Image 1 (cartoon, helix red, strand yellow):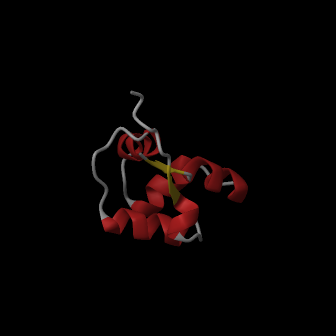
Image 2 (cartoon, helix red, strand yellow):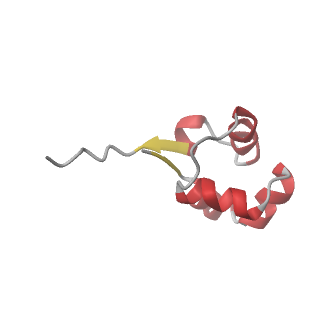
Length: 71
């Protein structure tokens, strides 16, 4: 599962989710879905904008959490 580190990056920079939504022109509902991992896709434009506004690389923005299937 891919997880996003958006809230931690915002906190480090002293910025809010509201600030990010306004700059990216995204609704808070959609941003929260991305943060919570409840979306099945995300556009490259959003990833690019997040990296730009959060001044980070893609690896800082997201990470893969391996939830091994239990047998």
